[in-house]
Length: 329
Image (cartoon, rainbow, N blue to C red; front, top):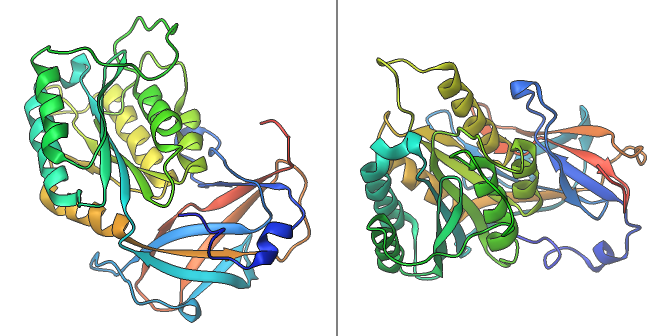
């Protein structure tokens, strides 16, 4: 959701420097990827759930506090948006590690579409191994999307690829590239809609041209939430080190983009999809001008949103890097 339409005219007249939002999650020992925002107003989208997991939708500006580096900030804009149309990317892993999960992928994709896709929504379908194949472009029709998947599984048809034509991928799984190019080539142009990727995979990668931080930054910069549905093949009932790394990757990408990840072998997938739909349909947005003086380029600032009611949990991006206009990472 873009704040420009909802904010006062002064928003357009401010001196510009670039703020970069990011999640301050130190998982895997890597620096959190930034989200570029070319104004000095800090925008944060967030959702709130109660202790029993119920989405809280009745908060007002007076019910939350926002802090930057521990200092309280004045909230300039606060709203809860509901029933925005959805622009979704369904990203299914068809690499060798997923060959035992093709039927579950098919079934769960159908369940997701039946649960989430409404008449004002649209979705595209990407299948990937070491190549990224667009099985169906944006469509409001779940039957059209599933027909495209069925044709692909039968080996019928020719499918355009995302990403540069000259990329040579020798290994079998381009997980990071699937997220990166789904964002920059398909979702980046979507406006006036809430955007998300639903990724069906084990999170393992061995052939991407981009790395995990590229995928995270691309998603953050376009306000795309990346939900992960994990299908991990276990050896003798146990996860290997590679399996565990893939699990941590999917968890990190989800958290840093304000989403969530789920293990397809645990719990009720219908319930998860209902939760994803609920969260995509309704969330809060707030904005503030940092109370402290302008910071030097490259500095990081932690954001904390704290509900005044006890027992509530907030899910959002948790910080930003300052980038002056035209600076390079």
